[in-house]
Structures are given as structure tokens and as C-alpha cells.
Length: 410
Image (cartoon, rainbow, N blue to C red; front, side, top):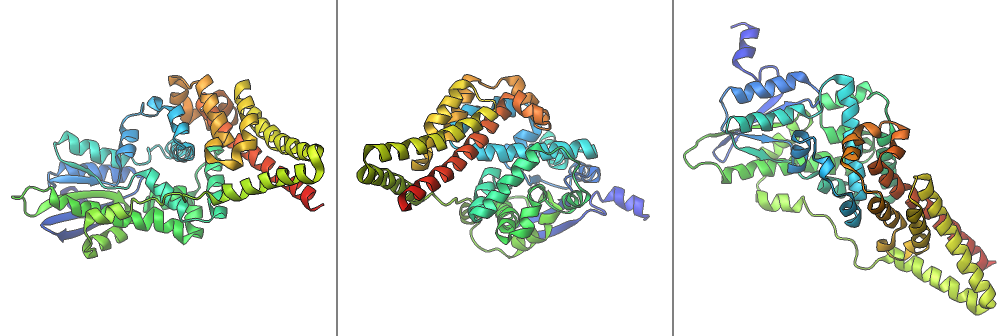
């Protein structure tokens, strides 16, 4: 038999894959490249062969909906996102979407098209579809919790840079996508410098997806032996996923639950307490030692340093006059409680007064590719409002705090 006829007979010929048999299930793990037409063709050919009883895909429900329903973003309630404190997560997803758009324009292939084809082709043939990946929000939260404040700052700066950038994706990043994982490529620079980030984004998900695959055994028909599962995952996950699928013995449900845990914030807001004590103590000292004049001067300097700089950040973002006023009022209170954060307050007011339209959401991915588009698009402008107001307030807090400290020790 010639090589070409072998490829026709075996849709996985020449494609990276592994076969693991366990608990009455024959798992065929197909490693794909998220920007390869050959991977799309291989997936479709494998499902069309009729050799599998179900298909597992490296997706969560949210990512599948984003891939299959282009209008998902337009139904988002941005005010709710801000109110629930998910602005950072929304920005991260937007950065990932912008990155994927640049790849699609550059390579002519939608990133993750083979994952989308896996789910849709399996559904069309009546095969059960198992979504085995961890929800992106959980992965992002656990990744940030594993980092120190400086590394989190670098990741945040990288997210902002990728949201503004419109340059071509480099050859080295494309190679990572051919051999690895979308999230690894997106945060590859930071993963290379941080073992903790790599552990959360790649290694943990290998273990999570292996546990999800093992749970398929609980749902397979009793008469099916062996039950044949095709698992479509990024090629970078193939070694770790294969090892965990063969070797892990812990209860898969308990293992997945453990890998979904996000550490709760400390019940004692130590940072807010320290800053609050410093501020209240500083104002009290000013009134006690210097009388009304000194105390009032300290209070006025603090309000102006934080309020003015927070308002300037909001104004630079093109905020509504009432959003600017909200930034000015909330900025002096920001260090005292997270619920009073000026960026959140001003962005909430902005999104309420200038509620983004359906057209804004639909044009978002294109608008964020240009600097002008950020100010034109209402969704993007709310994000700018959040980040620039927060930045202005942070500078004001440092400035006001240093001035107060100078007065106290002077």
C-alpha cells in the first residue's frame, strides 16, 4: 500500500496522536495545531470515518459558544460585568480575541477552527460531545493568584499591549501555535519567565482534561466495550495529557474540583486597613498638632492629588462629564475600600450613561485594532475609562501619600 493510500485509509496518518486504553474506553488523543488547515481536515476525516462513539474537545462551554455564535459578545451586559468586578477578565478575553483576529487575517485560518469543526461535525453525526477544558476565567484567576504583584503588573501590561497592537504575529509565536496551545502562545513570554504561570496555563489543564476524559467512563453505555473516544486537543497538551490519563488514580471529580478552586480574598483587608490607618492618623495628627489650618491643608492636598489625577485619567479616556465627576469624588476614597475603586465607579457611570449598542459590540474586535477606534467604540471607551482612571488615582495616591508623609516627618 502506498503512502497516499495509507493516508486515505487512516485519517490520523502523519498527525501527532496517542492511544490510551483504560476503564473500558479506547481514547484516541489527536494533537492539532490551532492555525493549521491540515488539522481541520484531519479532524473532519476522523469523525467522518465512523470509528468513534463520542468526541471530546479542548474547549469549555464559553469558548465553544464564542466560536460557534458570532453574536455572543453583542449580548453581553457590560454594566453587569463592571458591577461584578470582572472588568479585568473581560479585558483579557478581549485581548485574546484581538490576538486571534490578527492571526486569522495573517494566516487565513481562524484559530481554533479545528476545535469548532470537531464539535459541530460530531453533533451533526449524532455523536456525544464532551467539553473537557477548564473555564478560561478560572484558569486566568488561578494564574494571577500564582504570581507576585510585579509579575501580575507585567501580565497586565502585556494584555494592554496586545489589545492596542496591530503588528503581525511573529514566526516564533506561530510555531508555538503549531506545536502547542492558544493560551500558551498568548502568554508565552510570561510563561517562559514564570514556572508558576506555565504550571497553571498548561500543566494543570493537562491534568484537568485527563480527569474530564476519565469521567466519560461513567457515562458510556454498559454494552459498549471498548467505547471509542476521539479527543481533539492542542499538540502541546499531548505528552502531559497522555501521562495523566494513563497514570492518575485520584477520583476524577474530586481532582477537577480541586483544580477549579480559586483562593478567596482575605477576610481582613490588610492593605486597605494599613492605608486607612495611615490616612486617618495623618489627618488626625494634622488637626491635633497644627490645628484646623494644617489638618484642612492635609485633607485638601489629598483630595486634590487623588481626585484631580483620577478625573484627568477619566477625561483622557473621553469620559462623560458625570463620569469625570464620579472619578473625582471616588478617587480620594479608593484606598479605603475596593467597592469604592474609582476605575470601577467611573466605568460604571460611563457604561450606564453611554450604554454600548449592538453595533459597538459587533465592531469591537475591529475597532480595538486602531488607536482612534478605542475612543470611538463605547465598549472600548468604558475599558479605557476603567484603566486610565485607576492609573490616575494610583499616581494620585502615591503623590498624596508622599506629600502627607513629608508633612508628618518634616
